[in-house]
Length: 271
Image 1 (cartoon, rainbow, N blue to C red):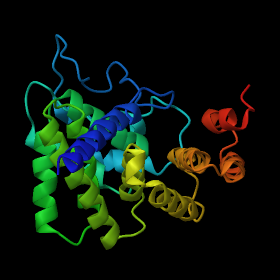
Image 2 (tube, rainbow, N blue to C red):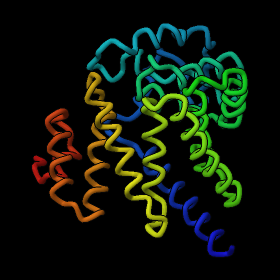
Image 3 (cartoon, helix red, strand yellow):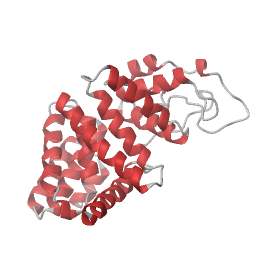
C-alpha cells in the first residue's frame, strides 16, 4: 500500500512539473495586449469597461482566418479582471476553452488569464456545471481535465494534487470515449503520461496515443501545435530504443512543418 501511495505521489509531482513545462514561454506564446486594445491582467490606473473589448463570438469568428500578425485581435487574450469578478466574462472565456473554432493560442491565452486572474476555481465550477447539464459533449470533460491539471500547478497540497491528477486522467478518458477524435483530450492525456515514472510502463500507451494523433492530424489542415506531436512521438521512440523510427517521425514532421526549430534540432539541421 505504501509503495502505491509513493508511486501516486511521484506521478503527481512529475505531472505538475510537466504542466509547468507546457506553460513555459515560447516564441509563439500568448502575445502581449497592445495599448488600447483592451485591459491587461495587471491593474493599471485606468480601468476600461469590458464592453469595449471585442465579443467572444467576434474573436471566434476571426479565429479561422489565417493571420501573420501576432498582435491581431484574433490572438489577443480575452479580458478577465483580476479585481472585479465578472460572471458573464468568465462564461465567455469558458466558451473559448470549449469552442472548436477557437485557436490553440486563444485557448492558451484563456488558461493564462484564468491562472493569473485567480479564476481557475470559478472556471472549474462552470465546466462541472456544463458537463452535468450535457454529459454527452466531449469538449466539457476534455476542458475540465485540462483545468484540473492547471489547478495542480498553482496549489501545494500534494494530496489534493494527487486527487486532481487522477480525476484529470479519467476525464480525458471520458472525453475520448465520447469523441475519439478530440485532439485536446488525447494530447493532454499523452503528455501527462510522459511524466509518469518509468516503472509504470506507460511507454507503449503513450506511443499509441501520439501515433493516433499524427494519423488524425494528417487528415486535417496543418496547425502550428501539431508539430509538437511529431516531436514528442519521436522522443518516445528514442526513449524506447527505436532510434530509426524516431528519426523517421521527426523527418515526417519536418515535411509538414519545414520551419519548426524543435524538429530541426532533433535532426541536427538547425541553423
